[in-house]
Image (tube, rainbow, N blue to C red):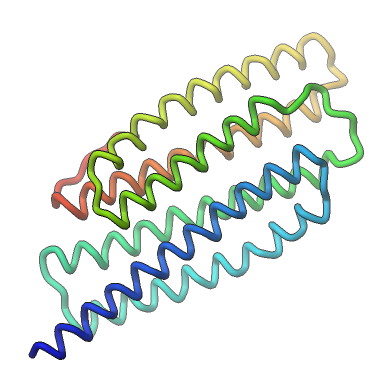
Length: 219
């Protein structure tokens, strides 16, 4: 029985490590997508878009592991929460990867154009979302409810910055119609970053559920 439980624990640990690796890939993808935009680096943007397949493949691997564990081990109580939250977290991570892909695609759309404004707030917004993701994964690793709560609170700061940049870009569009195309694309970028922050908040909420068994909605 002991060896069976040890083997089961190793499978759960492998699942956790896969989720953390997927999170690392997503964080790197977000960082490089925003970098490609700021530098108008089409090659880097293409690397981000090509790398999305690896993130998608990891989701499939993790989902298969979760379903196999449910079928073979029939987990209960906390073990079931570990597997269930694994499925939910990977879904949020995959969607974040999709948004990094979307940002990289916009790099391709505006590369060669003079930027209508220096990209200061968008990289700052990206840094905030990356810090949220790093903290949410750390909270998942350490089962740290307090850190998960701080991630949820940080989402308000991202929302406020999103609204600020949105209003600023609208002003550019109203003052100069020739900026509408690029300003619209940059609004999409901020919206993608805001959604990334929302998905990161979801991960923090799942960490709280994993530890306490109680569902909360901070987002």
